Image (cartoon, rainbow, N blue to C red; front, side, top):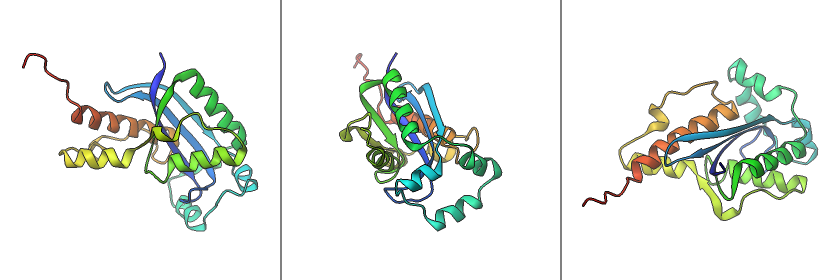
Length: 189
């Protein structure tokens, strides 16, 4: 089975659109059912990002230094070259996702933009079309307007600020909101 939705989470060394990436987490999912599919996780060699001119911000580095030891360990683990990481993500997408995949990220100006710009920095094409960008923050706000907030109420499993654990958590609460907002049509009426 190929999935149409992919939740992406990046851990970065900046909040700019050209941020250096230190890990990529992604999970295929189906928001109408909450089903989670195949997962992708790689740590990225920070030096490879720096050599490409990707942004490293002192405030973000200091923020990382204040996180838990597991979160910090995840960003300093031996990572792969950014080009290899994005090539591997494209291979994952080809094996797992439909051609019209919708890529979800946390904010219209964060995960998807940073990932897209990283592809450009290494000379690869992203696996999704720009019109299939989806925003987690927007659906969370819609859920709050509809009276639910699973982003706050759903118990987090795993280590926060681990890109894969964050992506899985986001896919779960986006699915809960989606199901709440898109109610099945009752044909008996």
